[in-house]
Amino acid sequence: MRVLVLLLVLTGCEIAQVTVSEPVSSVIAEVYLRVDDGAPDGIAILHRTSGSDPIVLSGASIRAVGEGGTTIRFQQRPQSECIDGELPEDTDPACYRTMGLDRFNLQAGERYEILVDLQEGASLAGTVTLPSDFEIRTPSTAPLTCDLSPFTIVPVIWTQAEGAWAYVPEAEIFGLQAALAEEGIPVASEPVTLLGLSVSQRDTTIAFPSEFGIFNRFSDDREVLVFLQQGFPETEELLTGRVVVSAQERNATNWNRGGIFNPSGQVRVPSLFGDGTGVAAGVVNRSFEFSFDAGEDFEPCA
Image (cartoon, rainbow, N blue to C red; front, side, top):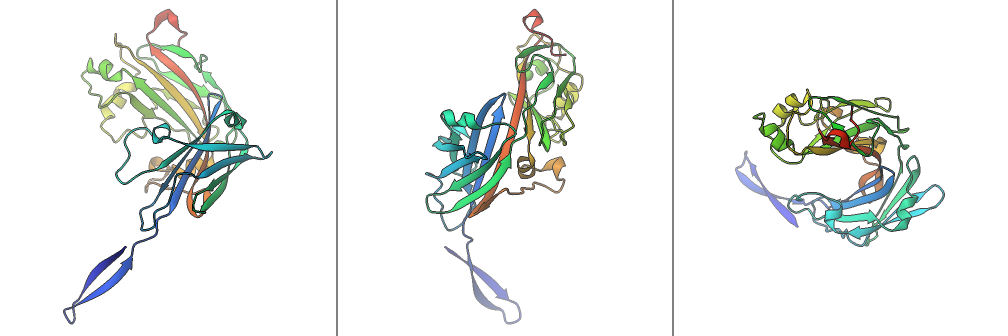
């Protein structure tokens, strides 16, 4: 496809035609190896930049090869198994996940070579070393449920994950919309998702919920975040949730840098190379659940 650009030559008032070729599309592969509370999993999303040359994303061969030669294979799955919510227009990614027993060969702290081969012959490759496993020490009930009291700040403390470049704690909260309605504070959506951030391997403490929401501070949730500095309100509404601490290695951190990571905007440093670009990322998660004012049914969070 060619686009005609008309240039006005001011000196002679003549019209000239210049032909500009539309760029060729390129494949982007995002491969995440993760261990979630001890359960290994792998997700790969293939998509492409806009351009004149369509790329076939289905039927790709994606493998993670360990140092001992163990191979973990990905299988193509429905998009809903990789992506939550609606996709932008003109976006049709292909979803792949690790399936079957071989996914249990994926181990925290191990190094893997990522190999992506497309049907039409294009290929990408890279390496990733997952952070080592770690534990949440406070609350001591993790990964089980603990009882969260009104107007209480809980220190979330975990051990170091060797090889982590950043920790991203995430809280998903159900019932906050109804609970804060009693305080006259609107909550735009349910559930509420709040993120925290620790930017070094040694930074292993964060206060919940007061230090969560660092990426929400310039959104419509500011009034909610101000209230949560003192903890959750006293309410008879059902309030539950899950807090996940995600240890991310160098590739994952560099691919997802933005906001306070990089004040000038989003930065994506690739770690997959070849006929395209992308990331070979490693993530290790530990979590706990909470139930608000549950009494003697659970141990206290704090």
